[in-house]
Length: 97
Length: 181
Figure 1 (tube, helix red, strand yellow):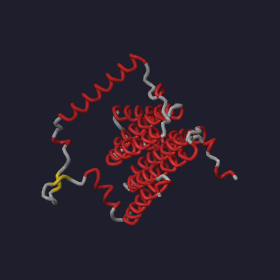
Figure 2: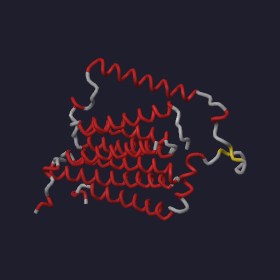
Figure 3: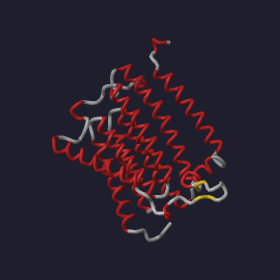
Figure 4: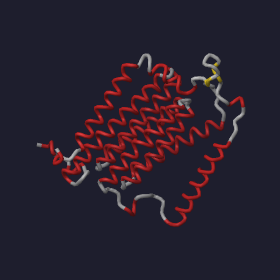
C-alpha cells in the first residue's frame, strides 16, 4: 500500500508539473500548483503509516499554507487582471525590463 | 498494519488511485478553467478516500472540507469574478443522455448517503469508550494528530496562525482598489 501510494503521488506531482509548464492561464497554473501540493500530501500520509502521526501533522500545516497561498495568489491574480484585463502569462511581462 | 490486505480493500485502493490519475489527466487537458477546477475537485475527493483507507481519517475529512470545499470554491469564485468561463464549455457532460446519466448517478449517491445515515452499526464497530473520562469516547482519529500538534509542534502551530493573519491582511491589501484609498 505504501509503495503504491508513493507511486501515485509521483504520478500526480508529474501531472501537476506538466500543467505548470504547459498552461498559459495564470489560474490554471495556480490550480496545477495545488495538485502538486496534494501529491506531496499523499506521500506524507503514505509515509505516516511507517513513521507515525507526524506526517499527518505536516499535512495539516501544508493545507493551512495552501489556503493562505490561495488567498494571496488569487488576490494578486485579480490585481493583475484589473491592470491588464487578462490572466494570460503572455501579457504579464512587467518585470521584463 | 496487516501485511496481506483483503481483496475488497486492494480493489478500492486501485480504483480510487486510477480515478485520481484519470481526473488529473482530464484536469491538465481541459481548456475551460471551470471544468478543469471541477476535475481537480474530483482528484481531491479520490485523495480523501485514499487518506481514509490509509488510516488518516482526520486528514481525509479536512481534505474534503478545506481543499475540495473552501479552496476550490475560492478558485471558482475568482473564475466567475473575472468572467473567464465560457458558457458552452462549463461542463464535460453533453447532450440529453449525459445529463440523464449524471442525474442518475447523483440520485444513487444521495440514496447511498441517506442509507448510511440510517444504518445501525454492530457493537463491535462502535468507538470504544474510555473509562478514565467518565465513559467518554476514546480519542479516536483526532487524538493521534492533536497530541503531537499541540506538544512538539506547538511553536509551528502558533506561527501558522500568524501566517494566516498575514495572508488575510496581504490579500485585502493587494486586492483593494487603488482609488478607494
